Amino acid sequence: MVARVSSALGERLVSLVLYGPAVHGDTYREVSQLNLMIVSSDLEPETLGLLGDPVRWWLKLDQPWPRLFSPELIRDSIDIYPIEFLDITRHHRVLFGRDALSSVQVDVRLLRLQCERELREKLMRLREGYVESRGRPRHVRQLLAASYASFALVWRGCLHLLGVPVPAHDGEVAAALCRRLELDPGPFAEVAQIAAGTAAHDEGAVFARYYRELGEMVARIDRFIVRSEKER
Image (cartoon, rainbow, N blue to C red; front, side, top):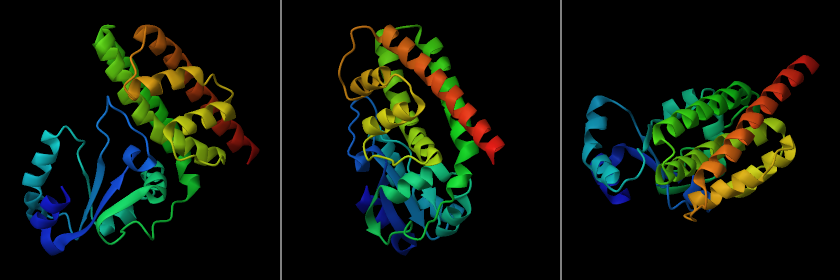
């Protein structure tokens, strides 16, 4: 992919960055995990058109869409995506070009609204996915695996918000957040095993426990935010 993108963009390619689980050291067999950020000098239609062939090839490998940025867009997006940029700036690998994230500074105070919004939105999508799965074990297993990888990034943001050190691995992140919020870490460990490719005896029961603890997590994060604002 590095060869294809650099050949397509030439001097327009500023940086190609790997981020996410592959850099954290986490492996999820049920979920594609090679997250790429392509930073080009501009995002004009002509430049976007040059990316058609390499991106099409990448998607055929069942990998997620690369994130497309210019240096200016990175600068202007930090306040909108503080969770993502906090994680990416701390855990990324430059595959080509210069480190376009080296000067990024994220104000942790920007995390409050995004943490709550992302938790509620992902929980809503989890509900919808379960309805769509109709309780079929294979589909529930895939739903849980995708959910865990998706939630893990938000859990990192929550730890930043709560002032708790953020571990490298997603499993340690989930455990740290459960300790801080006094939640049962068991369901999160079960879902982590499913995401890593371990079969579950009863996917429906795992889902129920996981779903219950996630609902309580959202409620406790919400109460923390409200209480903190009143104290300030």
